[in-house]
Image (cartoon, rainbow, N blue to C red; front, side):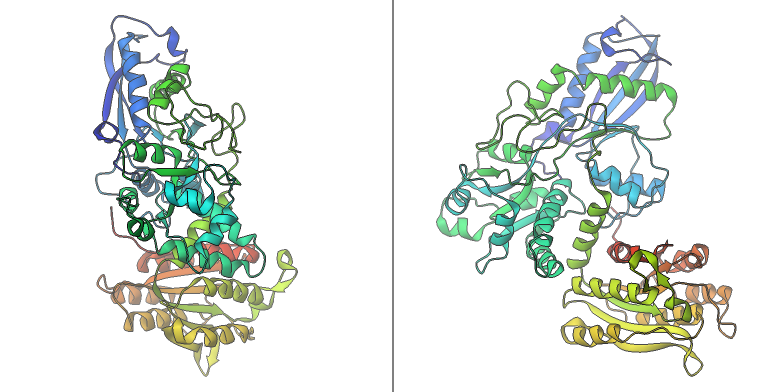
Length: 580
């Protein structure tokens, strides 16, 4: 989340009266008049650091007497944390964002949203907001993501500002015998943190050897220095020139260029260096998103307001806020940090003319990074339940004809490597009449991974499909009761079940009886989250959702079993969060 070091002006809501043509749009330069009547309110939520520039542009528009068609538009520009707006939009559109949590009861979605990064828009779309299709989406500002480091540390250890550095250099520093004290703002809630995470994990996964092990080690190294709030992270940088203080303070963190400039403007005892590492991380790009559902008059007003934000005058207003224009150049008065690349340089990608800010981002890579971080940095208690019915023998063409069972076990094995020893995990398999008349078999009980990891790996390696059918309902009820009976406070207690079919146990509990029993067992004081991952075309998502609607959690279905690895990670990452 953004820090408050920019002053009260950046944190306060700003309001201006502006006027727009009703119906057709014309450039703002042509909108002139002495008076207007009526009022339509256009709500704009902007990231705190760009909000003053947006408010100033709207205020100037009013001062110039902007009016047309006799209709007044009141533009309420509010400085809003992107994660807060994302939570509200997700709630409205039925999306789930790992690490974001629920929207506050008073949260209202704006007409126009200017978050600090297009990653928010992509995460909402991939998180289940299928009807979320904001208009425009073009970038109105830019701030490169850098590694912020106390200047004495940057100079002595990394040769700043003369030496060119890479993310591999940073990875080695974080994972050395005497590791650099690195920090990060929660990347599930902070776009600059997410950008740094993507770059560091890309370096880890591309370094050869056991890429997953290297990536997980990098995540855990960062997790030791994470902060929920940006201002808390900034407060951990050295506060005196004493060498002991410098050595024990925070040594590096992924921040925006604007953050570094704002921090140094406070005249701290140890200024921060901005290291522009290669390959250049994803910058903050401030997309102008017109949210769906607004009426035509508001849409026209939003279009005119956007035109205001593409002028040279607005570029200069951005410079006052230590922000660059979308193409990477900067306006009058911008004071670049020492060592900054030339305007539009530094390898920062410039979006093509007419394109959207999100054009070059990879939603799959973003989902993997967010999910991997959430799993590697949280602690939980989980029972993994895997279908071994006869249909799991079916080959998967997209996975070199490996069976559904093999693909499922491989996904579970990869996920196991992400969990640290603070997790407690158990393993069951199920079919029909797997143990006498019982549909499930316990491979390993739920125990801490610190003493259970090897047994779980062996148990997974030994899983084979049976010749039975799918005893889904009896197994689900037994698994839920088992997790609830051993429920532990302060952790996410969950059941994760993989299946490729519908319930086929004619001698077992019915769907209605299962739902009623789960409702009876449901205890707000001992919540159990249920995640069901359906594989193949025979699965009924409606059937699965009837279960998770009662328990909490979610049902995820893919007809391509080769995709369950990513689905598994994404599902596990959706731990419940306290409301905002």
